[in-house]
Length: 163
Image (cartoon, rainbow, N blue to C red; front, side, top):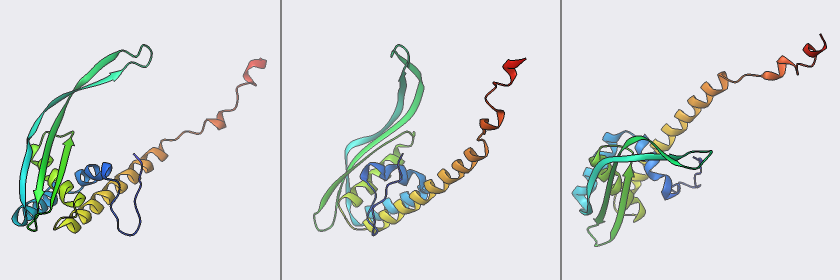
């Protein structure tokens, strides 16, 4: 995960939007999506779904696939139509079992990608999530720094072999 941002208030790359919105408070995202629904028409291109996905990883030695287990997955794909007729599509696929959250984030994805009404608020929420992730990352880095061990103090062990 790289921490790329674009300058001058522009949004980060679209591939990172869901990560940032997922880190923001869900109630704020849901309130914004409800506000968008008051101003725009929202159509489900595919019905929001949730379920379980199998998480598989290749073995490092033989490259055989093995299954670590099941993970919750939710998906939504929507089209948002602004009062002036402008259309934009948005989608979300989350490692979460809340299909309502996936639909909410799909709506935010559509309005920000299409610069539809209230996209400024979606960008603000994106910034809030980005700050929350940066804070979490800094906390984890601080914890990691306290667990570092300096093995250079142990010496190279050549003195023990002389006896």
